[in-house]
Length: 281
View (cartoon, rainbow, N blue to C red):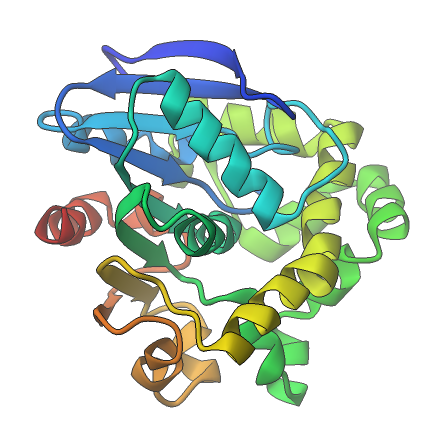
């Protein structure tokens, strides 16, 4: 897994991130989602690394990165700016999936001079979701509201992580790749990681929503080109009749397309995903 990549821990000021890097060429930062770690990119990163420098961190609070307590996307964005600066990359492309997509969007909004291209996989700005929240959203994405009850949710999940995560995601070693699955299992069985992941969702309903709503009220948009990909076999497309209209509120240069796979597209459809990312990059 990740042949030719190096693995290290990098102090970015407010957190210490576990980071895997490899390849050569224009830099691209890959940000994973919940409840994964950076190893979710193991089928994508080597393909991109043939002509890009690929940087894959565990988000703060996730995997083996530190757990500083502040899990706002603004804080995560600062981590990534400092991380890429420490690696010598002043401008870079960003790909974010799920919760990593929310962090990637905040990175592009807060640091427009640093982000050259943005790919958002199965994501929207958190504020865009919550402004449209209805009974369908609450039923389909109930976990947003459950996990946001941080201490209570973590205490319940930690009684039986396999019941919650296994029952919701139906992950298997074969589908994920054995080493990726082992890393994921280690994360969801670490009580401190589970508490931190719940803190990510708590921040989402509180400070992250506030930041998105402030930007939306000012008409602030993402400055760089955006590729918004959604999984045809997941439910994002079912919740919103026209994703293009939603994205038009947040970016002027945006393409919206579906990939025929389930939610974890980096694991399920890596070749098609890389083809889309190359077209953007």
